[in-house]
Length: 317
Image (tube, rainbow, N blue to C red):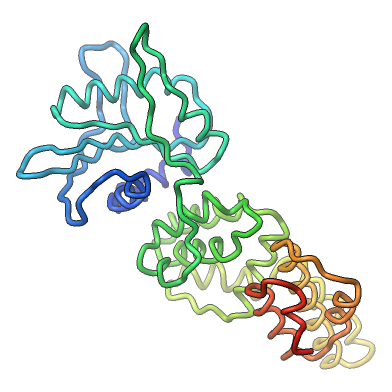
């Protein structure tokens, strides 16, 4: 049985078929910018007792005739059964539409992509090789402008690359894109993106989104991100605030709260540097943890995302 994650990803491509066109162009497949297309019945069983149904079938057209048939499969895990069903999809679609036909397998996971790319042997002198779009073929969406203009691509990019150490901006853009779709699918996209990142990356993402005061347009986004991030930010800032409030009861609430926020900001800076793989000296670490100037800490947090070295980050101080 297909998972809700799988079905949601299929719906993403069904709602915006141009997304697979963009990815195929990365594969140097020539698809006209203004090509017409239709979503066809994905039933691909012909004179066979076995039921075969693809995830999605997109037919591009030229002069009113089928020009290219794209059989799209979203593959989240290794499934040997597919090595039998994909050749059937290809042959039956080719016979039905009498046009160029390809099986395109989108795999967010590298190991699954390697498995799916193997030639499928049918017999002596006969084999097919699916066209696989894995993480290496899915671009890193690091610009917010691109994420806004093409949210589906940003979401797929974050799902594919969220486990990479240098994917902080990609993950943020994916979450921003997910916040602009409907609540049911957006929640699943966000959960899937965050499930693929390390704890350190997740904390860095949450800290940065709060530090930059992202404003979300949908009610779902304000509820899912706003409340979850601002009121309970994860380990770094949450721990800092909790400790600051505890001390504040004895030494003064205002002072305790300020110290807690400063500690949380310091932890966020160190987390971002760790995620990005930027080495930090003990002297620089002490400089961060001993600073109580919130404005300075906020500047460092923003610079930590962009700086090429830690020396560049602390050059002004």
